[in-house]
Length: 351
Ligand code: AMP
Ligand code: MG
Image (tube, rainbow, N blue to C red; front, side, top):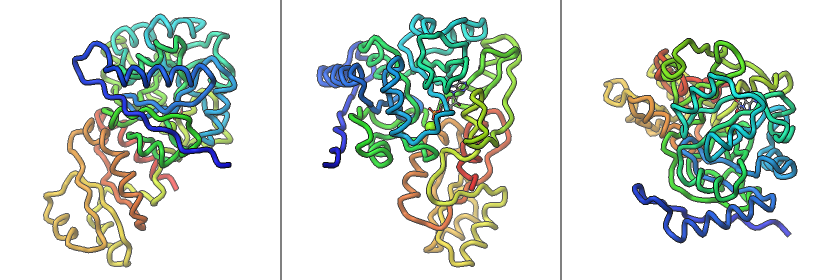
């Protein structure tokens, strides 16, 4: 008999309440029990929804890779409830890691440090380092503290697909491959954490994210380098730079970045294509003129990069359901503030 779809438990926690409401606390306790038994629970975080498993349970970790269809060479981020828990998972604690986490945790930044032997091999993809993050989302931290164990939690979607920013996205992508979904509403940041390798000097950004290079340099009091844009495929992927899979975060509809989007849109419409155009320039006369076409869906996007990031995956999920021929997105500005959005769009555009 087919496995049933997972239950989706709402877990509201109104801002300002020091402890969650009773039904949220009950859901956390249920989730913690499932995790202690080796189950998989999708959880809200401030970045995207995570597919969580007890990070110290090698069998549960195998289930995460199977549920996602994730290549074994792509390691998982381990989520902790505080800095003390993080240090139990590290063989060494570089000064750079200490500076980053003491200023920016809880928050959307992941540090790579030498791993402790306590961390199962599968979590680190056999590598000598482990990725650690303490989420800003109170629900995630409360769950980890209740379990008393760290949670390995990659994004709660099938490998290479768009990351989920709502409980509904998780259900659509994973279905009965997950045991339980905690619904904390839409994710605030909407894109994956910044990943910083703290085992090199200077530290290196392996994946741009909500915390910018400038913010990292400010807390480190020194330079940070950025890894070259990824062009690695699953077979040749070095264990050190797994977030660099060239195609990732991709909708099913072909996505194209265009620096001259209005012309590109016009050309595609003339060729009889049905398209969506994600643009910040909704007031431009060219856009208004093209928007009259029945075959074009104009999707207005925020002009602020953080707000753009927060709605990007939700917009792509929504557009993807319409089975259009293409999604056109304006090429974002080449600035630090747009780095993370530009990175995700480039990977989404990779055919
Ligand atoms: P996801 O869980 O899909 O958000 O992806 C997790 C990402 O974390 C990987 O793709 C890498 O970018 C990064 N990561 C996890 N562990 C390591 C590690 N030991 N070394 C370098 N990067 C890592
Ligand atoms: Mg992912």
